[in-house]
Amino acid sequence: MAVGSAISSPLGPASCDKDAKALQFVEETTRNADLVQERVLAEILARNANTEYLKRFNLNGATDRDSFKSKLPMITYEDLQPEIQRIANGDRSPILSAHPISEFLTSSGTSAGERKLMPTIQEELDRRQLLYSLLMPVMNLYVPGLDKGKGLYFLFVKSETKTPGGLLARPVLTSYYKSEHFKTRPYDPYNVYTSPNEAILCPDSFQSMYTQMLCGLIQRNQVLRLGAVFASGLLRAIRFLQLNWTQLVHDLKTGTLNPRITDPVLKETMTRILKPDPEMSNFISKECSKEDWEGILTRIWPNTKYLDVIVTGSMAQYIPTLDYYSGGLPLACTMYASSECYFGLNLNPMCKPSEVSYTIMPNMAYFEFLPHDPNSAGCTTRDSPPKLVDLVDVEVGKEYELVITTYAGLCRYRVGDILRVTGFHNSAPQFHFVRRKNVLLSIDSDKTDEAELQKAVENALQLLKEFNTSVVEYTSYADTKTIPGHYVIYWELLVKDSANSPSEEVLSRCCLAMEESLNSVYRQGRVADNSIGPLEIRVVKNGTFEELMDYAISRGASINQYKVPRCVNFTPIMELLDSRVISTHFSPALPRWTPERKR
Ligand code: AMP
Image (cartoon, rainbow, N blue to C red; front, side, top):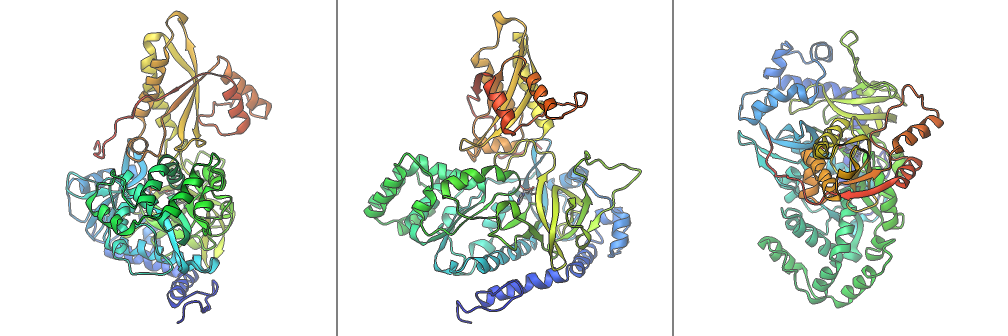
């Protein structure tokens, strides 16, 4: 089939045979959502019938929904800890999955301060690959001509470790980029990247970012889309350009490579790509030296049609900054996925961020939904076991928590995401990502909950004891005006002996003490990824939190039920707090972090 001639598909005219097949697959799978779900569950239960886990619940080889639903409990990561620990320690017996666990994927969700370890099996790579293969065919329905240029994507691998039993533990994207699926992907004119594999796969984050940026600059006129996984990642790349453009421009002018690029394979690759181009170098230098970086992305990459980054969930906080740097280019959120399982895709990727809905693909896993009452604490009692709803039975407008049963052996596992049904594509529901449960603060992939923040404050308080000083009240704020963003903690102090009040030095050490007790994803963001800036304490005047309460009550809060919000982002509240700040303090050093896990 000639490129450019449209092939009809129920989703729209596909641009080539390959796209038509992919769109056909989406159609068929969503049309038969319930049947596909039934088949997926039967497949999972049949192959795992002899696992220790399924035997424990006396499933006796049954593969039907009723037996499954009546016998298997809904669980959280904590419930599976013992099994996961045994697998990590080297037990290769079929505990959760009949297929051997090929590696652990380290989630950005944490348990006891460490990344959760998600067991996975080799064939899951095929399933992830399948979901990826649907993204461009859908995008091509909305943006023509993507085969006429390239995508500048900032993609990175992160450090990996081995569990005591010798299994690799690494993030899902690191696993994917290092797989043959990615490294030896067949040429697809609609999906060509400016970054060579060697740059993406370089474990040193500076060298990787530098060379990806350099390749993006060299091919600036061919770039049709710009992206990173999350919005925070693309902003980090812009910040990198701000900090490094003079050296990049030098390399472009002379055709020589920054000596900080020392990885031999990467150096070799770059030598082949880099040629002196004084004209381009001058142009970039002129643009970057301007005081005002508004619209910088479209100035440097003038043919960019959209930014491909996730801006749903906690990433929505970056939309205004992305708009500023891109001059308001469309933002495309293409997929919804996790370490546990890849869930689905956005069938209308050029829609406004506030309207993004993800269609869960029924072939990826068996999906159930726990009704979530936005007004309740979300507790379920023993007397009334929660009734889980099947994929095709969810109701438009209602909120649910996602519960999955995967091929790798997670059974009725609570992911922790709250989703709202916005509609259906055929019989597959589409969901708005509402939020992740229990997340108070998030800058990048870090997720800090209320208990972790409380513990961090308590940790810092130890340093104030000798000054007879305590923290009367506190709240927090994710400040994303800086790149990278950082946590701000507002403290109201009670200094009992003003002659011996804590010094500036002590208060900055309090910042570091808080960082030391935050979870390892936060600390990795600070230390290895440079995706989170130093934590800041803003000390506010005495009486500020009482004013905050007065304000809340004036807006209708009940005096009896008023609780200090542990995180704020409502502008009038921020203005009130900031107008009462008497001193600010930043973490003076990096917290401790190593790729090794505590457990
Ligand atoms: P991880 O466990 O580190 O793989 O992170 C997976 C989590 O990231 C999901 O459970 C969601 O909470 C979040 N996430 C992934 N994709 C999206 C998306 N498209 N929009 C909002 N949040 C997302």
